[in-house]
Image 1 (tube, rainbow, N blue to C red):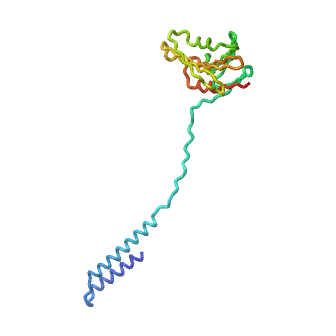
Image 2 (cartoon, helix red, strand yellow; image 1 turned 60 degrees about the horizontal axis):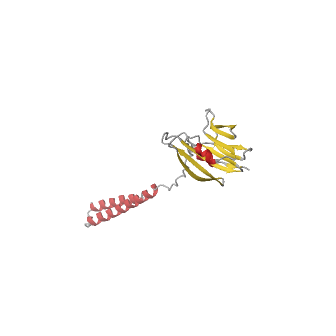
Image 3 (cartoon, helix red, strand yellow; image 1 turned 90 degrees about the horizontal axis):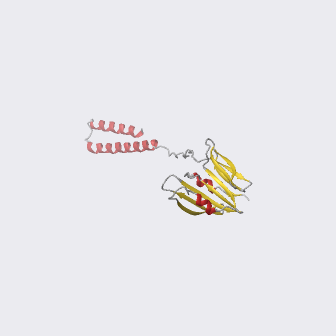
Length: 206
């Protein structure tokens, strides 16, 4: 603001000097001087304006990602004191226990269905090869693969039987032997990724 006042004063004096009868004044020099002062005033005003309008540095707020819901299935635990093992199964499923043909059978499946999906078969002095031979024996093109597995420190065998006759028929069963008993954990010949979570949660309790 002071610079603007100075400019007006200088300009007024210049005009006054030019209009008097005093000795001739070099108007060009005066004009150049006025222009210099005007430019300095403009530059200073611009700098002051820039300083005043410079926004304060704002630290961005930390954004916390929203919690995402997962589709993971809740599981519950099944324990058998009689046969000394435990295993986890889906929370919205039920189970059934039965004895048949010298074997004990625990089946698991959705509570709104009468049929089971997964099973645990316990045989006293059971023959693993005989049980494997029965898996898919109704198909002439039966194909079998065996994979060693270790669950809870116990070595076992994962057997997978397939057939070209029915490509969606995939029978998987895991065999463990302990204390003279054969444990067979089966998927009911229905492929389901959760079956891996099922059989890998198996552990002996005694």
